[in-house]
Image 1 (cartoon, one colour):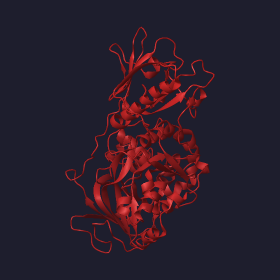
Image 2 (cartoon, rainbow, N blue to C red; image 1 turned 30 degrees about the vertical axis):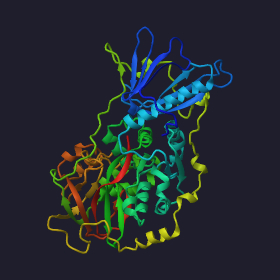
Image 3 (cartoon, helix red, strand yellow; image 1 turned 120 degrees about the vertical axis):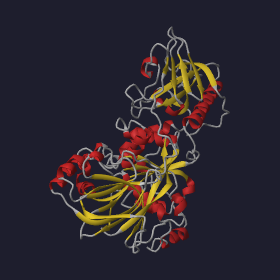
Image 4 (cartoon, one colour; image 1 turned 90 degrees about the vertical axis):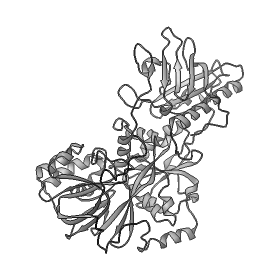
Length: 548
């Protein structure tokens, strides 16, 4: 977001007509509470749009054919909650015609633009924030999920970023591990953050590319953002749940607004050590058994999106598998569990200030606001006098600016030869677990550990999990778990599954998995890893995720 180079007058008040409004002008004021719009009609209604619901402002001039071609205009974009608790786009276009000179009117419009961004930055977003003066690198996987990520960007994401004047550069990945290769040699100082428009798999590539760098301890703290575009969107769903945002109504919009605001929330990461002494960085989950089997085996149905999980669950329950394994873990008791540094917000909508009744934006500003649909932009009636960075994802090649020097790349490759244990505090895999760990051995139907509330849009695995609670949430189903319980769990992982007999959830800070049978499917963040011993521990609050 940019506020322009104009002096900020604060608070700011004035009287302006809404575009094509008849009658008297509205009185508007912007301050720490947001934007207050008071109509001068007989009822004199007042509407307050919170600073945290506004995203940006654009200044424009009238085309020559307009009667008042000396007029300037400023449009304020916001996404308040409507009566149904859904985010609805609201664009209010105000006409400035106080003076006979366009330049003077335009100067007034620019002062309002500066005030809008001041309100959003200082009162709508808490610190820390991304560096808004730099551009974002947006990575798009065109083959993720149903294969519509590129269209999602053009139709749903680019317009919102444009309204917030967010600078960005788009790169469309061309092959598996392309993102991994890019971030290993990326000049991070060029960007304010990396945004993923894909499923969770592309973020897995990004984090493990950052892990391969010589400066990995700093690199893994680089700001990241996620916009759902795949068949598994666990992180995006979990963030929305934590923020109490109405995700299901419009998942892409809710997630894109996180990117526009760019508040940086701490997020736990998990560092793995494999049997061949390689390291893996994880942000979502690890597990084996029926959930992992469903996730991987249903890949052939990815074209139907997240519905593939439910379809394949039926087949797996009918043909149940069990896996002999030994699980060791360090339990986290509630008294030692770290708490989130940010209170979960209460979701409130911008309200109409009126003693007798409370009404929606649509009622008060009906036929006075500019309601743009889809890809429509204000140019349909006004000529913009500012430029918004819009980039076609199809036209962007891999730029040279993404690549660091060769020497740096060689040093990063040398540390990934399987001998590096930096970052670990737990003993190596070939040594016994510490005395304060617990161990269980069984023919497991499932052992699945997640670090967030959701592992996909509709799989609410750990209801009490938070992004920075300092622990992993391990759920296990032992050999004696009835098929009826397993079926009920898979068909309704909505929080109530924790009350089913035989279902146990444990908070842990470190975990060791030792397979004791020949075959199995072990996954980290939904990606298959070798069916062999591995262990991990939490890197508390080492990641930074973009949120509201």
